[in-house]
Image (cartoon, rainbow, N blue to C red; front, side, top):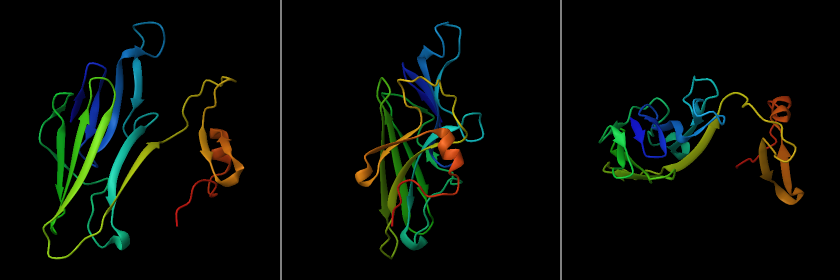
Length: 179
C-alpha cells in the first residue's frame, strides 16, 4: 500500500501491517540535489532495515492475534493526508482487528487500533508498538552528538550506550525489563 504526501513517500506492508518504507521527498543525503533522498525506514531484508511495527498480544496466547505474517486488507491503495486508510483482519474466532492509519501534510502519522469481539467469550488483548532496526547504522562520529541508545534506568541517571557496546554485550540483559 502506498504512502503519498507532499513531504514523504513510502509504503505500508499489508503483511504484518508495518510502516516499512519512508523517504523524505524534500531532503537529500548530501547537498547535491541529485543525491538520493533521505530514507527514514526501509523494509526487513533491505540494507539498513528499519521500520515501525504495531500489534497485539494476548496474555497466555488465549486469543489469536495478528502477527508479522498476517495479511491485512486495506480499504484503499494509497494513504494521503486527505484519505486515511483502514486495515482490517478477522481472526476467524470472533475478533476483528482494525487499524486506521492517517498522515498529515508533513510527517506525522496517527495509528488508531480497535478490536471488535463478536465471539461467545470475552477476550483480552494488549497493544504494543516498536521501532525496529536490523544491522548497525552508519554513524558520523561527531563529538557533540551521541549516536546510539540513551536511557534512564533507576538512580543511575542517563546512560549512553554505543552500538559497539551493544555488540559486545550481545546475550546480556542490560536494558529495560518488564515483569
